[in-house]
Structures are given as structure tokens and as C-alpha cells.
Length: 150
Image 1 (cartoon, rainbow, N blue to C red):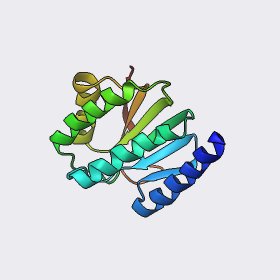
Image 2 (tube, one colour):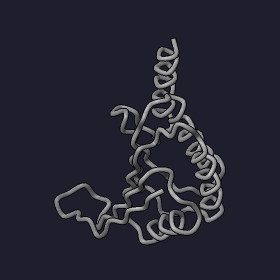
Image 3 (tube, rainbow, N blue to C red):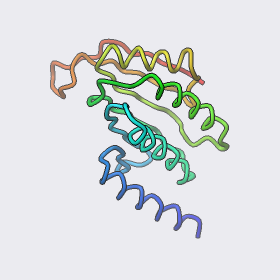
Image 4 (cartoon, rainbow, N blue to C red):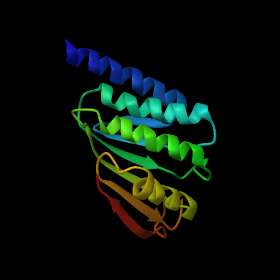
């Protein structure tokens, strides 16, 4: 019975993710998030609500975050997100296994570095991949990779 409820929740989440085009469950247990600029409460709350929803499935998952569309993140949301990560870390069992974040801007890289170095330890291992270009082509190369651990 619980499995049926969890599958129904996953289907609802898939439908919701189509509406906001931010979360893709099609390759579950790999969940993809396509982030926009984080400059207001509405966007921030959609991200946090989506991440809390991942735990409702009660199954291990990996997270891949795409930041191609992110050019601006207000600092207040970085601090709020750090508090959110502290809250998520207390959940047991911990279903998040690994996170990969694709980055294309120095600003975003520096914000992620600050988040995972000074504001909050990650819940699970995090790999930041800094790309030379937002375009998916043969000229796109990795500039650097940074790993963070809980």
C-alpha cells in the first residue's frame, strides 16, 4: 500500500515538474533540476518544496542541478538555503546519495563554494563542474571540478 502511495506521489511530482519545467524525474533515481535565477520568494519556495518532495518517495536518489539559466542569486536566499540544508541533514534515513552541479559563471561557482565551505556542509557528496560554455557542443570543456563532502 505504501509503495502505491509513493508511486502516486511521484506521478504528481512529475506532473508538477512539467508545469514549472524545473524538475525532471524521468530517469529516477537520478533527479534533474534546471534552476532559474533565484531572486524572489516564489522561485526559492518552488526549489525548496521540490527538494523536500524528493524525500517523500522514501527511495535513494542522486541529484543533478543545471545552472545554465542562472545569472543571479540573491544572497539572502543563499543564507536561507544553508538553513534549509541544516534542516534536511537531520532527516533519517538520508536518501540523497550524491549531487552534481553544472556551473557556467564565476559568480555562481563562488556562491556554491561559499555555501558548501562556510555556510553549510553538504548533505551528501557534491561535485561542482565548471564548464567553459553553456552550449552543448564539442568545444565545451570542463574548466575545473570541486568536490565537497559532508
